[in-house]
Length: 104
Image (cartoon, rainbow, N blue to C red; front, side, top):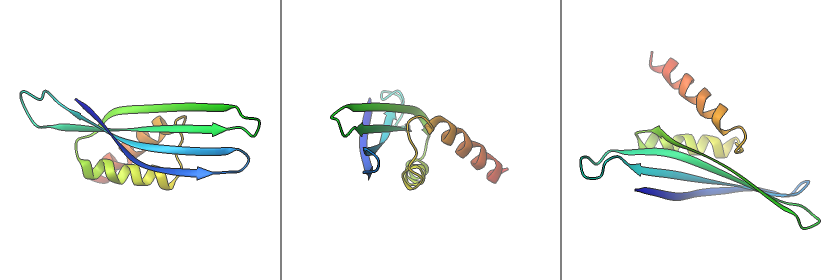
C-alpha cells in the first residue's frame, strides 16, 4: 500500500510562473507480516509559460527512510533549498553520504 501525502508548495513568478510541489510517499512492507513503513519523496515542477504553454516534470524516489522524522527533516530541507526533480537524486545521495559520515 502506498500513501501520498502532500507536503507543500514553493512558487515563483519570474521569468515564468513556476511551482514546486513536494510529497511524502509512505509504503507499508508486507502488511500481513509487519507494520514497518518505508518513506520516499516526490517532487513535481510545473512551469506555465507566458504564451500559455505548460511543462510538468516529476521525480519520485521510494524507500529512502525508515523513520518518518528523518523523511520529514529531509522534506523540509529540500523545500527550503527549492530542490527540483532534476536535482533530487543528487541531493538524496549527498544527504545519505552526509548522514553516514555523521554517524561513523
